[in-house]
Amino acid sequence: MHRIALFYGKELAKYGFDAPHPLGRDRLDAFWKFFHEADLDKFVRIEEPVMADEEVILAFHDKAYVEYVKKASILGYGFLDYGDTPAYRGVYEAAAYVVGSTLKGLELIMKGEVDHAFNPIGGLHHARRDRAGGFCVFNDIGILIECARSIYNIERISYIDIDAHHGDGVYYEYAKDKSITIADIHEDGRYLYPGTGFTYEDGEEEAKGTKLNIPLMPYSGDKEFVDAFKRVEEFIDNANPQLVIFQCGADGLKSDPLTHLTYSEEIHRYASSILHKIAHKHANGRIIALGGGGYNRLNIAKAWSEVIKGMLE
View 1: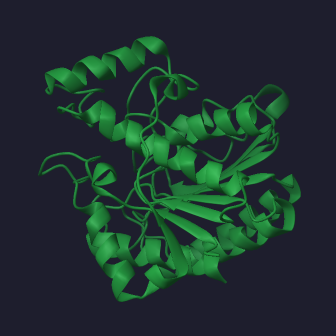
View 2: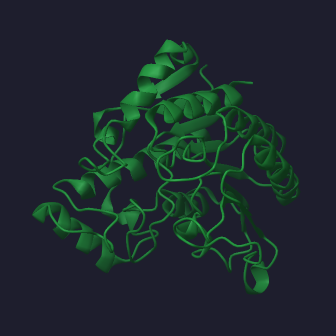
C-alpha cells in the first residue's frame, strides 16, 4: 500500500493568477516535473482533485463572504481583498477544488487507506472567515480543522507552519482555542506581510501557551531554522496531537522573490521527518502536508519533493 496520497490535476492548477502575479498557475506543474524526475511517483498514490461543496466551505467561512466570492467568480474582475488577491472567472471553483482536495486527504487517512496526504496547492493560511488575504481565497486549513472535529471527533490538532509569511488566518481564528496547538516559524513581521506573528502572541484567554510564534530576522538560514524547530519539536510532542497539519510553504528558501530568508531545501526534509515521527508517535501517523507559498519555481519543486522524502522515512 502506498503510504502517501498526493493530489494532482488540472483543476488544482487553475488556482492561481495571471502574470505578473507571483502565484501563477504554473506552480503545480513545476513541482510535478521535478517530482517525476526524482522517481518519487513510485512511492505515492496519485489522487485527482476533489471539489468541496458550499456547505463544507461554510464550516469555516461566513455565508456573506462565500456569496461575495461566487459573484466575483462570475464577473471575473476586481479584487477579493485590498489588492493582493484578484478575482477571475472560475476563482470560486478553483478555490473549492483546493479545499475539497485537502479534505479528501483527511478522509483517506481516517479510512486507513493512506497514512499521510499532501496537497501542494493547499495551505491557504491568510484567508479569514469573512475575507480573502495574501493570495488566499478560502482557508482550507480552517475548514480542515472544523471537519476533523465535527466529522471525525478529533479533539487535539497540531498545526505547524514554516511558510515565510505568518499564518495569520489560522492563528487569529484559533487564538482562543486551546485544543488547537499552533507552531509557526516565519520571517519577522516587521519586515514582511502580514506584519504579525510576534513572540508574545502565544494564545489568548484559556488558550494562553498553546501557540508558539517564532519570528526570524531577514537572511536567517538553515542554522537559525533548525534552532527554532527544536523548540517546535518539543512543543508539538508535548501537545500529544491526534492529527498533524503541516503547512510547508517554500518561500523561505534562498532567492524567493518575495521574502528575505535563505533556507536550503534540506530544512523541508528535516521538518517533515520530525513531524512524521511525531505523527506516528501520537496520531497513528496522521499527517497532512499543504504546499503553501513559494514563488521561485525550482525552490518549490525541491522543497516539496523533500517533504515527501521526509514522510517516506
